[in-house]
Amino acid sequence: MGGIIEAAEAHHHHGHGPANRRRRVVRTSAPLLVRHPPGDGSRVRGAVLVLHGAAGLDEPVENCCRTLASCGYLTVAPLFYYETGGPTFGPDKAGEAFAALELSDLEADLAGAFDYLSTRLGLPRHRVAVAGFGSAAHLAELAAAHLAAAIGPEPPPWPGTPGFDPHAPDRLVLPAGPSAADDLVRFLDAA
Image (cartoon, rainbow, N blue to C red):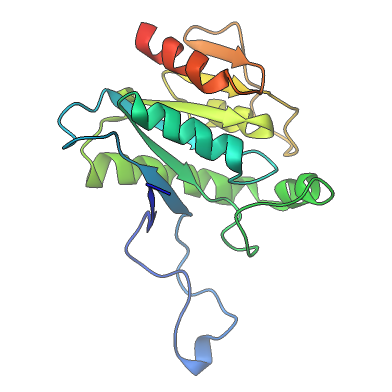
């Protein structure tokens, strides 16, 4: 695994003293899987916020991050399941686990990822594209990204979530599969 997991903010989401056990003290955003392009970082072409779907931070999401990084794009993938105990869920529990995530928490996770990219890495928001897997495709619209792609889009489980509009400018819908990352690179390169 070439990437590292970093917290998007410096604060812990929990306390360490006996009075704070099982109690959330400071609300922060999700940890991030970050993959840097090879080299010294001087040729970063842009950044892509990669949003996992119900299955979690699984192999297709990690493969997408690897492919994008190898093509010069810095990738950041928030781990939305950071409070539920693991990076992935099996097919029998994935949909229920994803639907249980609060939309306000997901919005905070997206804001934390954008903040990480701008504050720590100096990448302005207009240089950040968003790619969402499955139901997370709708979070790409919620993030109001300039460029957005939906990979194997599925209906959102959260009421009030904006739908992914495949006809809007600078939007792309891709079927889930092994060629999705390569097609995404071509889309980003053409933008």
